[in-house]
Amino acid sequence: MTVERANTYRQLLKTWVEGLTVHHPHTQSHAKRPIIHVAFHIYDFLLLFGPVISWWCFPFERAIGYLQKINTTDRVRGELEGILTKSFLRGATLRRWLRRPDCPDCPDIIKHFKAIFDRAFGQRSEVVGTSPPLVKDGDRAQYMFNGTSFSRASTHLGNSLVLYYPSSSASTPIAGSIERILSHGEETSFIIRRQAPLPPGQSDPFLRYYPYFPAQTYSSKMQNTTDKVPPSLILSHCARFELSEDRAVVLNLSRS
Image (tube, rainbow, N blue to C red):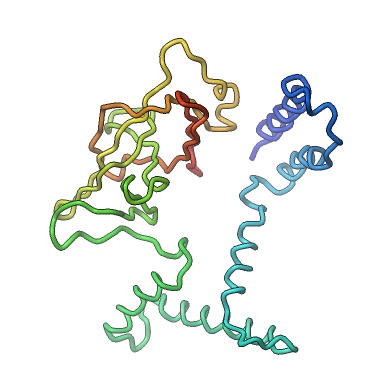
């Protein structure tokens, strides 16, 4: 986070507020909302605490979700706190023990159990790595690369939407959807269908916000062109929202 980015946030918010009653006249009769006042104070928080991702509430909500899944056997009179604490400590101790490089007195069966344990009970952020080769070459429904999960569109559309470089010499990423995931020995490649660009002469209203809001308008149609690329040429996942029958907005979800 920089002072420039924080100032830009405040200026863009001010522009939106000033244009709200102009572009949406019905809002003139609405009661004033305190949330808009609060939104201007995000500027102060950006300077004090850095990027929003550093202090938003999702990690706390995730922890609450974890605590809610603990079996308390309906004991709530003074024993609930102890049950939650003991369950959390037992799980953390087991994870720490299994993660030790020497894993004391670990036979192969325990090491195998660790992989199953991580997949069954670990948080998504804890399950990292790359999918192993297939026993037999062919198509995959899903593939994990450096801790990020990708899917073909027929399996999970959201995990198939990516920004990628169509070749190793390309300098600008483009949007597309993974149609197939092919594995041959140790090598895996993605067959990606390109998102069609806007027709010539049509403007992209999101360009004024770049790079502060990394969204771009595309055509809602897909091109006939497909690219075969290795996972290393994938920049990130992206989100796609259909604005209309002929327009879609693609948002870069990369944190880099």
